[in-house]
Image 1 (cartoon, rainbow, N blue to C red):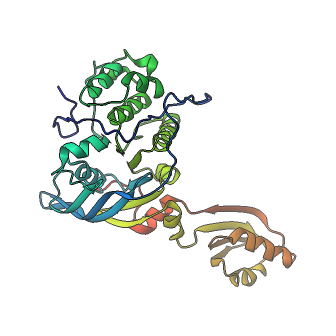
Image 2: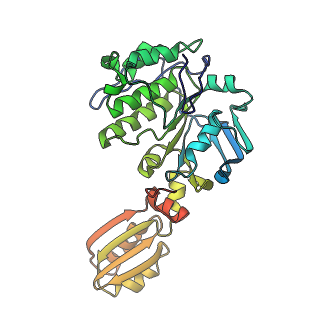
Image 3: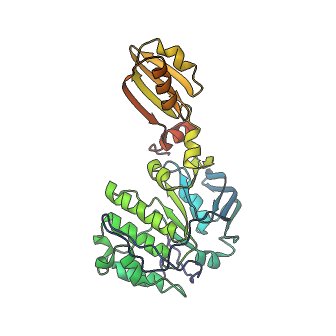
Length: 349
């Protein structure tokens, strides 16, 4: 029986030949030894995915409402938002698992519904709700998936390269969370796809397993695979993604680099320190300062890039000595809150 995606529909495909290498998983503290060809240079180029005015409605409720963005070849593109924001529905439309009610989707220039077979040759998918039978062994799962492609990757090599060689005969139910996710990525790559969609990959993992998975995602991209990473973890998106689409209540709130999104936060850099009150008017005149508040001898200063250097040099020039200095900058969490009005950890109904 062919492998089943989240909808329960069978998946049949044949291999694309563009990507020949697969990533080697390297456990912490060990050096990688590639069994495949050298990595493809990380060059972001032409668009491989295009969404234009995408709509999808369930029971009169818009799950996806006029969503538009493009994904460039070679990048890790993030789709971020709270649970229930429409992220998974969006990528299901991209993969051809859902039929949009309006708008257009193309994957490498093809329609995922009309050109379903060819798109599935070029697209590897790991969906949030996918699972395997408890008794199915890791090696059996990869061998099964490989059997549905004309020119699959070597599934035995994939087991080794993803750190699962010793788990070849282990049933799925007995794999750890991190091992299941490594197997899930390997299954998405067994057909040598040009693009991989990874949906909520690290949900439920402990911090160490999550960071190991991040390293694995970067290794996959280094082999030339374009990645669409769906997540509600802002730290994950900020660390991994070249560009990010922020989805809120089914709509795109913004598309930008992580740095570009953070730069939209008013007072992206912040400082707190103790200093004499006569410093206040001096600091307020600095072009990098956007705000200053005082509570007793403690002040909080917000501003743009270069804030720390500007404040310190100004204080030194006027023989003012700061104490208890702390500096930080806005994060993607702050940017998400500024764009949507609610933190990313909050779940929508």
